[in-house]
Image (cartoon, rainbow, N blue to C red):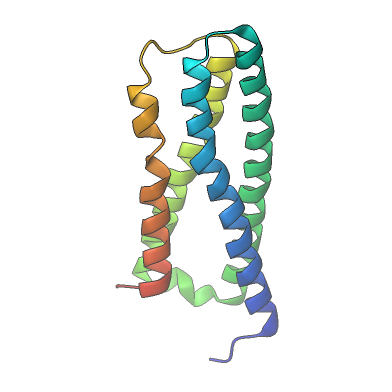
Length: 144
């Protein structure tokens, strides 16, 4: 199968915007920890602004990742018949749930519902690594 030039451009843009999305997914939960540990109103308000802006940027990255991913799928519909791709889509669904959960944390912190302990947020901060490794390994290795 000859790969078209458009496919390669869409793939490059899909990867670039995925990096943007994941940068936000890695940093935003860390901001939640800093926000929860902040003791003054000025710092908490600053974290509210930072979290909201970062969420907007990472949502744009997520949307563009999805758009270019759909273009790739339209060009190469054979992906839908491959088992590894189905697992990748399942991981993508989990990643979208994680993304939405980040939005939920933004809302909670904005209204002042600060957790007493940041242990859960520290674990939450590590979840995107699992998605990233799974998605990349599936896309590169295509194990089944």
